[in-house]
Image 1 (cartoon, rainbow, N blue to C red):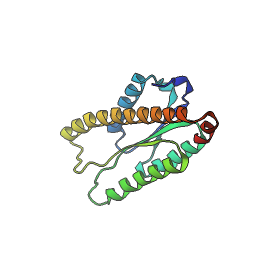
Image 2 (cartoon, helix red, strand yellow):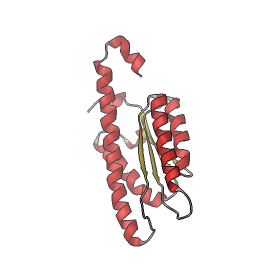
Image 3 (cartoon, helix red, strand yellow):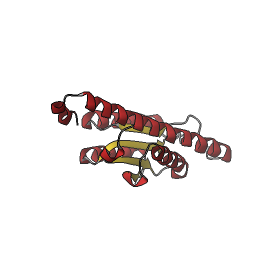
Image 4 (cartoon, rainbow, N blue to C red):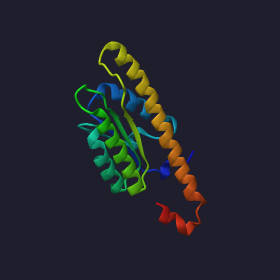
Length: 164
């Protein structure tokens, strides 16, 4: 585990759709990041109208230079009349593009359940599942930040500035 005083911030960008369920993943993410030594005031949370808007704010956050990592969280469900797969794919593609263009790690906690219904049984299942996913994305975030830090330490000193 690296020294957290060297770390700036994490941006957590969440869709407003299904925010009650997504709160379970966000709180699990915060809890797991605290386990890794992150203070909650070092994680900036942004709400956007829907999943489709996450990649734009992720790119602006990455280009700002303030963030070591960015997490995008959404629940994209089949509404029966719209092609939800299109939205889910666009979000994932956008987040990957942001990561590769800006050199800032971007993580997706954007889920697309097959048969989502808002009844109590699905509500309980998805609230538990989203807690698990929040912990998983925190583990991925911490693991990647540690891997990047180790990579930078292995470079000759004159190359460290170029890797950032």
